Length: 191
Image (cartoon, rainbow, N blue to C red; front, side, top):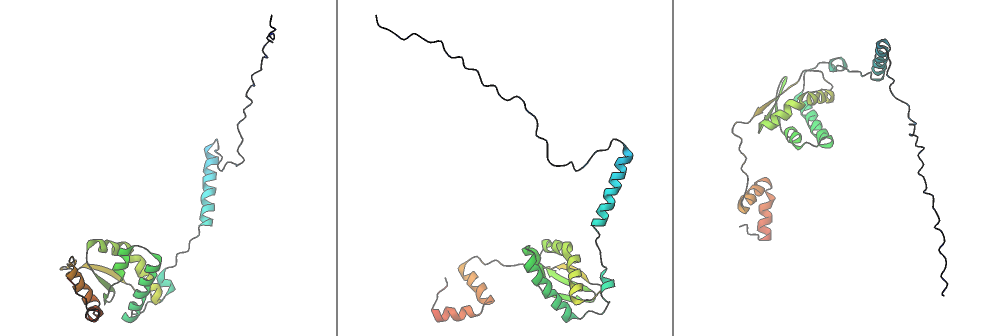
């Protein structure tokens, strides 16, 4: 009779118990606001916070009239300040509509600077930015003279958009007269 190994009793494995001792992690951060139980303490905390904010945010607003004298405005100085404004705006602002509005000639009739515009969008830009522009002009001229900026929309402004190659060539040759010379020297045919 063959000898078979006698079965051994199965080892009873103890199930590993999960660590149930869960303790929530305590935050290292301190609370920023403690909520008082009575209203008097709450009011005192709010008042103290307002006072500290006022001390931290002391903004000094200097009136332009107290900084610079009021003098008559020279149109050449105004034109120079306008060009500086355009250069500053090109460097620090990226709204092309504002730059298009600034990149134009104006009419000066003391104290009104009048811009002739193509559409209502440009007028909205002027209305939005004119106080900033006026302040910049006064700072550049070091003059507290009152300046007003008004915007007029050109009544009969129609910009013809060139579509065909010949229209595009005509437009470019008007804008850059040297193009005709290049055309003749290179023997180009524009169809």
